[in-house]
Length: 408
Ligand SMILES: Cc1cc2nc3c(=O)[nH]c(=O)nc-3n(C[C@H](O)[C@H](O)[C@H](O)COP(=O)(O)O)c2cc1C
Image 1 (cartoon, rainbow, N blue to C red):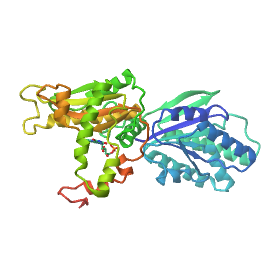
Image 2 (image 1 turned 30 degrees about the vertical axis):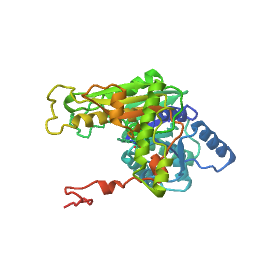
Image 3 (image 1 turned 180 degrees about the vertical axis):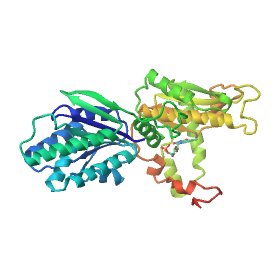
């Protein structure tokens, strides 16, 4: 979703600092779009100081003449927060290029188009330069007038306008967009902001199956939040067929590890030669190191003899339980907790070891803890076992196997 915010104020009034405070709440990528040119030592120093203040986690682009081109070029990922600092320097760069006023204002409008088309948040910083005495040079007056006109155009089109005075921001205009696409009052009342969306996608794309764990515990309140997220999964007929058996007893985990060792030995027999060697080298569990394990089960009798929606597809209770596991996995990622799913186990043995009632099936045995390693890609991809299939190969249109969307 696009959000546009203008921060205006006098020189050294706290504009950039306020922009960084707003940016700190953003969980997605952050881009700094600088219009400043390091033409002398003082400017070089100022740029270096600002870079230091921003800290790591920012991508910087320097574009003194055409900052809109960066927004349009795809250099900023959707969901990014872009800070454009600043309009007045950009205008003076254009004036120094001897561009006529009309040409400059046309460029302002083009920049605004780019800001409003960008799929993310754009924070633009400008200076209020008109409050002082009338400049005594023609060039100074030209600059002041142009800056005033540009600021008015930006403020008119942007969603939000903030003014900083002596380090204190005030909101002059707030017109935050609702992201509901229906535009008729229907739809979700509580839309996701660009930051919300970026956070969700970050959890999805950076979730990993983790097998290398630190041994320090996951705090009880963190685990509770994660389990609460799991419990809020969709379920057939709202039957909520799951249970979460939290296991931190080392003796019980040792038993499960023995189960794994046996099952893994049998699984290795599916391979021979180099493939078997590679298989045997893979770490496929973290049962003993992970400080906590969770056995997610499905009670196949939950909800009584007939559950709404579970008439033809009896496995929908198992599918529902998998939805809970995915919620757990994503919430854990957001909490910085790694999850590893261990399925190389005898389920009969697991049932017996945990004395599960006859109607209860173990669905997922999960290891949870803070990761001891970070995998940018799935570990099986890193190890050369498998690759992600391109999306285009798994999306079909209207007919099985048709990967090309035919438009009339
Ligand atoms: C149903 C299921 C069972 C899995 N069982 C195991 C397992 O026994 N051992 C293991 O190391 N990983 C297991 N995984 C993790 C997969 O290997 C992992 O999801 C896959 O390689 C993709 O990596 P990613 O989860 O990091 O994206 C399992 C995953 C799922 C969904």
